[in-house]
Amino acid sequence: MSFHEQFFFKYFAEPVYNPSVQGYNLVNTVAYVSVLLLLAFFFVFPLLDRRGIKFDKRFAISLLPYILFGSAVRVIEPLGYVRKSINPLEAGFWFITPGVWFLTFALTILGLLVARKIKKESYHKTFALIGMLFFLPVILFVASHYGNWFFFIGTIVLIVILGQAVKFLVNALTKSKLLNDSTNFLAMQGQVIDSTATIVATTFLGFSEQHPLSAGIIGLHPAFFFIVKVGLILLILYYAERDIERENMKGFFKLFLIILGFATGMASVFKIGI
Image (tube, rainbow, N blue to C red; front, top):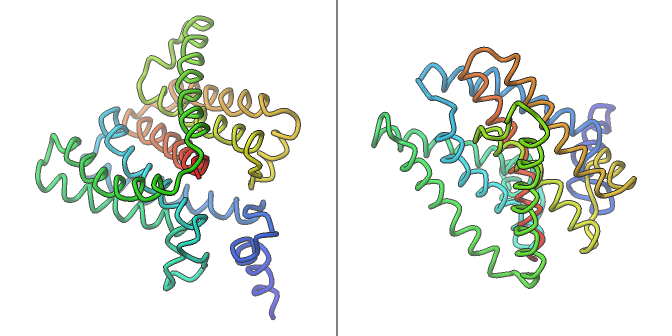
């Protein structure tokens, strides 16, 4: 086996196939994030921006069913219906990262094209409805395997309470009223979802955190993980509001943050019910 083959196997293939190996490591995390950033800001944004797509509150909300679809699909593999694979020609590839997000992206673009074909301007409700048609069968299938409804519902209630608490504190302690903006609130809420679900899963349900940096922070104290995640997103949003002048780029940047939080966070929430 050549050096390149050994490198690929160690950092990309083995974390998929070998349950005893941590799913994420520094190398594959940097690779996935780099590809995601390049695709998002050098392909997706220019492509959609030229076609008049406005990345505002309406677009962010109408995109949520597609994000939830991708998060729910990720839960099917742990249920044992497919086998993990790094081969795009095998079904298992499309149920794990990164394949599931390629699938989600393709369905999102399909939904957007169909919605804009039906209604050129006010397409958001149609776009969201198409996304719900993708999402609902998957989440109903996943929910049919649930046996841990107490923690699943409890986690959702806790997420709602914590999100509103963070908004209240930010508005009370700062002059910026940062979270009165709906897209800012959704970006923050995504990190509340991710951190809360991770803390519940690792503290009470025996799950392990796959990202080494996150695992290290949780090891210090679970509450510290929540504070770091939420504090960091608030700081990023503050500078985005201040420094990104072009409104559509600012909206797309916030949308990118929303996707990151909701995609990982809701996958954890859906797994809690199993």
